[in-house]
Image (tube, rainbow, N blue to C red; front, top):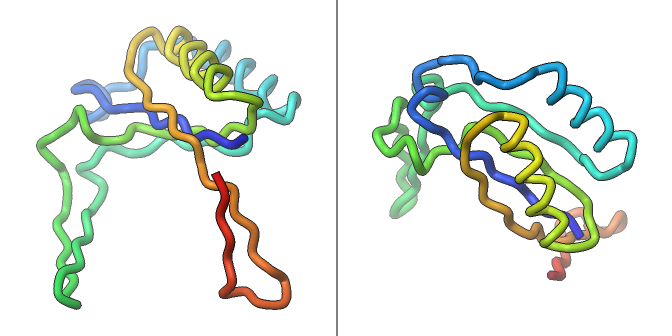
Length: 127
């Protein structure tokens, strides 16, 4: 099963303060997950001051540039993992946070989707 682990921002990450974590240890942890075939992908994200938010209502799009006030609701980064259970994904999120030294994460199961080679617009999703 695939899970997305969403790592939440804190006030430090919203003002470009680098994380106080052991980057070598984090690198080893992520490398091992990659070698084990668990880590599908991951990225850290710039603070919301570098971003924009798009809204579409009534066919009209509007864009609001960051920063955004609700820092605790913003995403600092994510990891996509392939594990046997939700419990295993939670354990990985906890290991990441322990290396990071602090933080919060949300673990969400991803839909498994397959796109037919003969019909690129036909998509099926299962949970």
